[in-house]
Amino acid sequence: MTSANVIECEEPEVAEAIPCCEVRMPAGLLGFEHMKDYLLIAKPGEAPFRWLQVKNNPALAFVVIEPLYFMPDYQPDIPEADVELLELTSPDDAAVYVIVTVAGPHRATVNLKGPIVINRNTGVGKQVVIVNAAQYSVQQPLPLNGNAG
Amino acid sequence: MLILSRKSGESIVIDGRIHVKIVRVEGDVVKIGIEAPAEVPVHRREVYEEIQHSNQQALTRQCTALPKLPLTATVKPKRETAKSV
View 1 (cartoon, one colour):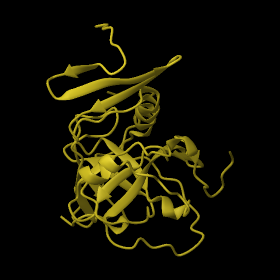
View 2: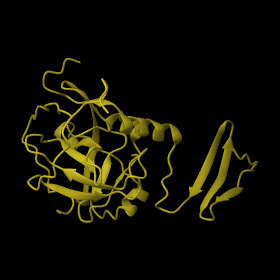
View 3: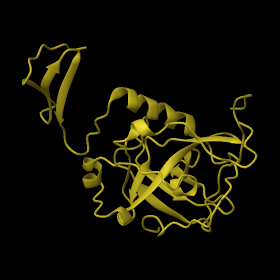
View 4: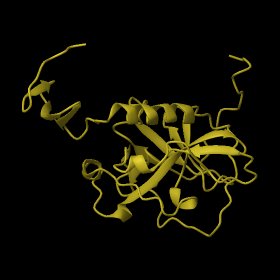
């Protein structure tokens, strides 16, 4: 198990104190189509970041963030077919998260082409490829404290 | 790879439920119409692969130390996401 490339860490404990909610993504994530059930977890001291963790495997998780925290003018155009699939009836129904790639304490990027859209009422979500994907980057740098580039 | 010749206006059927129609051929651009059930995702391959690669890069373990994001304003989400457990 131990090698130079493996980061050893304690398995995350199942803490009741951590607010989380279940998210079902029938189509999975792109490249992870077989993983459909997730927990959206907010850990103390880590806001505005959250964890989208594979429900049955705490070792597999994605860092996510709502774009309004760093790009309030982000306007993802969600394909009509996805709006219907997710049964979204108004913009307020949709929670939008983008996936963060953490490259270090001072460097992280977000994927703005493929946000995760979740129906707040049903808990069903999907990673959608937005219609206006050409306007946005799949590796948009996050404005971080002490960003050394 | 199965290779079929189709003319403009002709279709192929996949798995009895996915219809792919050659709508128009203009020079080296082919316009394709796809009818598939809502649960079958259809993507342009290059965008799909770009996001797939990004997802693979982003997959991490929860011990990862998160960076600090300077919060410029007191932005609050309108509501809590999805239903609570």
